[in-house]
Image 1: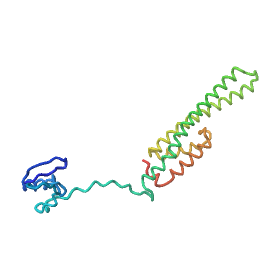
Image 2 (image 1 turned 90 degrees about the vertical axis):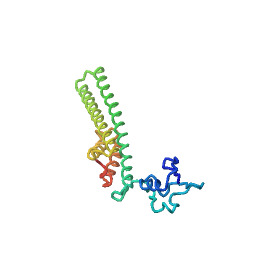
Image 3 (image 1 turned 180 degrees about the vertical axis):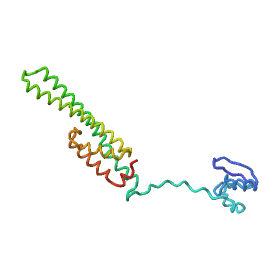
Length: 206
């Protein structure tokens, strides 16, 4: 007669030799299962019992971790990590672009209002001020729309979605009239385009 310690840590038995052989066949016991033979005090692995050695099933192999296959000479995780920096840069640039464009728009509207109140009586001068205010407001609207597009492109880039849109957002970031932060936008746009042009990065997009 035998007692065993199951996979759940509980003791089972006493059971007969035939019953233990059946449990081995059913996979409920294997070579590493601890067994206590009747009349003994030492628990031993089932593999040390000659009468069961041939019947004891080997323990299942540990689950293997999935390996990340290299892509274009770079691991997939490494290629994906390259996207994070420029994507975050586009997101910050887009948000900053909208804030500055809104501030410029408010200033243009304020200037238009002040020029109306403090009219010099000179029609030509008033007309020039109105044109400048209109252009300022137009640039502000373009800046807000450009900021929204850049921000959206950065979000998509971080998610590895819409490759074409991400390329377009990177280009827009470099356009002065659409990106209020021109020097910063130029640097981030170039950085983003360089990363997006890499084959191992481009293949990750869906």
